[in-house]
Length: 623
Image 1 (tube, rainbow, N blue to C red):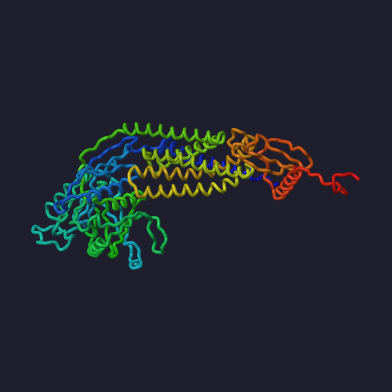
Image 2 (cartoon, rainbow, N blue to C red):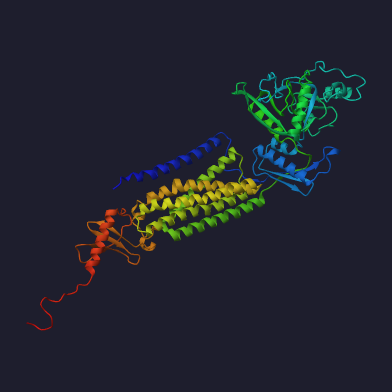
């Protein structure tokens, strides 16, 4: 007999599951203790309510033309990207008619998130003509063609301390003449754009006043523009628009790359332009690199405020620039986010902003929970009727799946900003059927093995090998469907796809780490292993018919129609009946041969004996 090492494996597997649950709720407890998380998941707009903002598009100038549905759709895509980047989940963004965009944010969004929606976020690039405040430097992204170009020396970024004062010193640019030239020599021609009116406006502008940093006014794209930065630490006179924000292809933050190819410790922002923007930017850097400060700077203007004004020291011909300075990780990421999602094709006017309730969502949630409870009860009742006491394993597995699902969703609400919606609740209800289906497949495989005459421990092992492939195949199909639906759908449908995929993964974890190990332990008990009539593994109820060798020349035969089994010994004329122990170890080859011989001997003994004619008798007479 093999050593009983198999019995120690289920406990180790269950211990691993316990450690996994402890880690999940331990991490959640740390989040609750630090005040960053809660013991309940965040709810989406339809369950918790939130803030609804209605935006009315407005053309930036006469050349913008008519606002079409394509323009509205593009604006919705950009707004959705910006909101998703801010960490807000389950936001609803849709067009209202042909004139408005409705943005609904769940819960109590921060003021910064609301500003992402309220502001028009038009972005432009203008040359700097005059500046009062700090600046940053820019350098090309290292490449095969310009790797040997010396990098500019970084200077402080606009994110300097608020204690810095504006420079009231003499203007480093040439003083404007009384009679301006008929036409500018370039967009950086200070003698043309710095008129006395512009100079006076610049001097009167107080950027410490929040009202002067409200944004929204982008100025005439062909004239000088006086504005502040977003922090109120610098003010500028900018030339005409040279590059539109739509020509910025992408922006990303990260650590700088050293000349030797290693990674440095300074945070930078890499900006990539499209083909049109790259050509324009090459002309700009060629013109600005030979200028003195501040004429060698260009400004990224977002919604009327300067978000960055780096200086140029080299020509950047390939449209890949790197903004460097004393950035922190957060400030670099913020700038990259603004450059990525800062260019909306139109400006917006906030038509209304109001709080919305979740009365309807709460009523629907209650009905959804009732439907889920009814489905759960029906699953349990069916399991009890079909599997009797074995249904307790189904209930236990569903409880473990619920514990894992609740913990994971709550952690995702804290870390990823996930919010549970009605569609997500629907996904959780569907998961009950998926999980129960896995148990049914497993139990039926075990019962099939029992019908073939194997013992319960052997049936559990063989049934698991067959059921495991079926369960994995089924869950893989469900997971693929959930992933495809998540990436192709929008809005609340993605919430359904997410919970469906999550619960499918958790189903695999529960079946492997809980259901199968517990079934292995139950197979060694007298109640289940002995085939009790209420265990769900009663051989008579399953229709088991088999003969097995019981040792010492005895063969045990079980029939589905007989309440007891029959023992037959080769040296006993009358067989004795006794119950068939389902938990008897499986037969070896030698035992099968011995059982076959015993069965043959029994068959021979049961044949009727016929008398032979006596010797010497040829008829009925006596001699």
